[in-house]
Amino acid sequence: MTEKPGALIGQIVEVIKGRETGKYAIVIGELDGRFVLLADGDKRKFDQPKKKNIHHVRLTGEFAMEVFESIQESGRVTNSKLRYCLNRFAQQINPDDALEEGGVNNGER
Image (cartoon, rainbow, N blue to C red; front, side, top):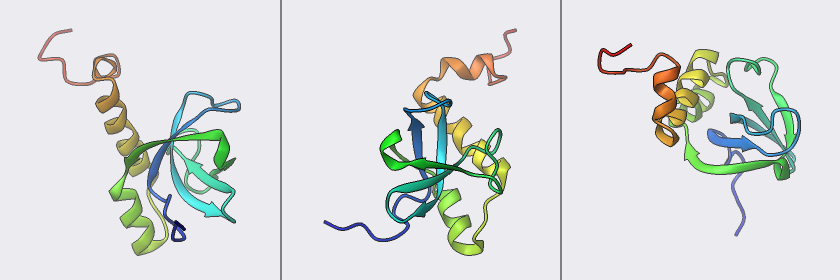
């Protein structure tokens, strides 16, 4: 089964090799089937993405449709949209972390 070009764009991935091991990012581009361009909107902005070997990331199976649609329409995505999608993903996988980072805590301090 062959994948269409751009099939990974918008995919949320976990970095498993390198300095940023354990961090999450979103695929914003693909290079020759072996490398992907990653951005998180914070340390790695859209204008300066990280070029990463596809074997050094783990696909989470989650897909940021807002990012995909924005890149398809205009060829760009805002850094705030990248951060928003990653924060929403982080809340899905670990809702307890949302409290530590200013999430809703039912009025408790």
